[in-house]
Length: 255
Length: 185
Image (cartoon, rainbow over all chains, first blue to last red; front, side):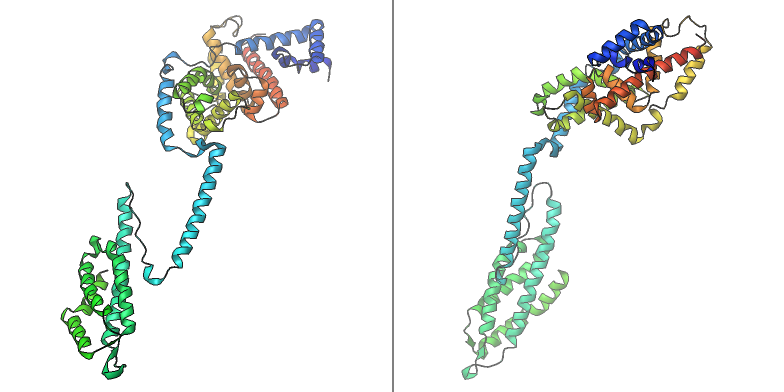
């Protein structure tokens, strides 16, 4: 590469003031001696002068520049309400991740506790509706109420059938209903937990029947371990008269 | 900018007022119409606000701002403005032909009106390769140091110097070629 080529490669940086002292001295010395390179340098200097024109690529006055900061501030303010992640910053992100982990492990621990509870106490609570998504949670609530009520009615049905089919096994021709009494007590407890669900309009018809069954269960839960045939007959007559088994089956079909 | 990070909207308005023209000039070379460039300016400042917490004091604010502006230009290009952005070969050639048909002054670049000269120069800048255009826009319209340009473009300072040299000599070449096409010298 000739000295001229070498110097021409440095001319732009020479005018930008970006050369080291040694290179700067070499360029200056060469330009003072070489007319061709001096002409080249003048051309570059002219182009740089035009590029320094403040009106080059400048916007027209009619773009509403005066209004732009105000308009952008309003838009930015509006977007701020719906935007979260980047504004957290690194500390915010660290805290968010930590909080998420704590909540996550808390939920896992809570779920484990719920799974360990006795059967009679496992009637799950319905989700609590929050403002703004009532419709969505309402549907979940209704489905939950129907499922719980249907399950409860099935348990009552089994208990009624078992009670009416009890065989004499105690002394003096009495009937051992001790297991049924225990189950009746469990179902009474379960009914109390089910009452909030029974307030849902979707299970309004079932609520009436469940209340009637509650009377029957209360009567059964107060029975002796060994009950007389007469009392069992009275229970059977009540079940037939009120058509409890038939109504349970019909309602289960509806639910 | 620190006040903007705290959510101070008055500081944000002042920041927009201070930089809006410079950002417009930097990205104007990438868009065919000023209206497109204007929209990119707005996108840039909105993105700046949204991402304000990602700027760190130890880095150059100008480099960060123009990085956003260049990315906003690229986004706009990708969104479907391809037909409206800067493939300007035909446009410049058309102007050369049109000018050649007119009565010729002694030197088309020295004696044309300032407005006409600006238009010729703007078109010449648009004909540069993208990276050279970025460097020249950031240097002359964004008024940035070479180190800041390197930070904004995420490349070594040596690459910036090399592209700046190529851009200025390239511009000179385009303008002199145009002068030859018009029949001078």
